[in-house]
Length: 133
Image (cartoon, rainbow, N blue to C red; front, side):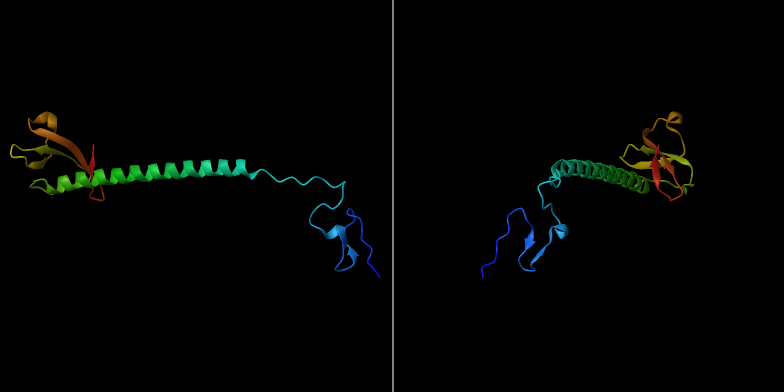
């Protein structure tokens, strides 16, 4: 006996020999709501743009912090290589000068009170790191 073919608009599972329209994960009748794919391209583009801006901002912050650290290192190297005959006190301001022989020296005398070539004023913080004022 030949099996009877069901019409195309009828959902019939030939394997189980049952009508299973109610358990399908998709619409099975003409009156069902239209399935439309959501446009995820706009969301992806916005997300990519946000991530790119965030990464760029973090990169610029890290780059600025690295440049500050290098500058701090250069100042500390310059001051620790300078000549001075006293022990600097934490929390005090000192002034760096250049001698005629291209030798740097550290002093407590302010630039306004002497005629030496001033390279800058520095503060010795609690971590014993020289900070330019």
